[in-house]
Image (cartoon, rainbow, N blue to C red; front, side, top):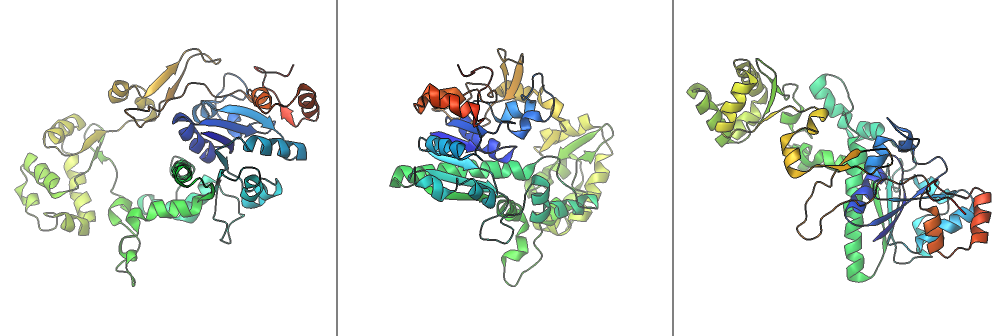
Amino acid sequence: MRIIDLTSVVMGPYCTQILCDLGAEVIKIENADGDPTRHLGPTRRPLQSGMFININRGKKSVVIDLKQEEGRALCLRLMTTADAVVHSMRPAAIKRLGLTYEDVRQHNPEVIYANLYGFGRKGRYANLPAYDDTIQAVSGMSMLQSHMVGEPQYTATVIGDKLCGVAGAYAIMAAMIFRLQSGKGQEVEIPMFETMASFLLVEHMSGAVFNPPLGPPMYERVILPDRKPFKTQTGYLAVIIHNDKQWRNFTKALNRDDLANDERFRTQSGRSKNTRAFYEITSALFLEKTAEEWKDLLEKAEVPVAELNSLEDLFSDPHMEDVGFFREVDDHPDGPVRLPVFPITFSESPATFNAIAPELGQHTRELLDELKINNEEITALSQKNIIQFGHLNAAE
């Protein structure tokens, strides 16, 4: 599967990185400045930040100025070889470039064309700029956080970008399956606002499913301020006492028949109705022992418990070492680097990456040769700054 990737930053590149790890050939079209993530965070060499290296591994980079007509024509020519085209521009921007689905399908009728952007085209927000922060805000995520911390807040990760990247990957694969069955290409739209709203309403739809509503769109347990790691005498633990068996095991381990038989907490329904009181009581209990004592006690009682990792801890977590979660690349131009592997395993077709993230324009010459563009035309395109070559693959 060949994908022409006109995306940048996180959402689109994460989408195509997933597909690349799964075996697709991803050709990344960049402008002369490169993807903005090339410039974000620590680097050993220019244009090769850690973030860029991580979410663009295995891809090929071609530099084309799409704002020039000859650049657009060259890109369309490349798109005739593609199974899928993916972009993350607003509808008006991709239309100005003359690279909409209607433009591309004239040259490649069976193409799968994926739009990853902020808002669906049928809505009034269609051409508003969208970033993860603004999507967290408009989707309801930021206000949800206010129930826990007292004021609206963004999550400590670009959850909208990444979630919609995943959604884009599975949507493109679904379209591929349809094409294999029918021979037909199609246009796919992955809007961040609608995707995030759907994601948040999985549990929070709650009583609003019914018409008229039986309650507000809110799953109370997950938005309570007390829903946080429990403080012990020596640190914090994550503990979830969810079903009735876990509650019985928990109270038995503590020899607390009074809690086991408390009508407020005896059943899952009761604990759900009395969530605030439940957290108040359990929070006080956890202050009576050390984290080590609680962990030993709860593991024996088969109550879910976990220590708190920092991101740094992930690199030395013994389970991560057991499953080989990080892959060391020793022959990288930047020196040794480590990258997370694809987290899902396949018995017959394992996902992997066989190449590092590309230099800016590293594969321009390779793709032009594939399109059988002669040296005279290549020189003319280069002199007009329509194309650019990486220093690892300079024009002759």
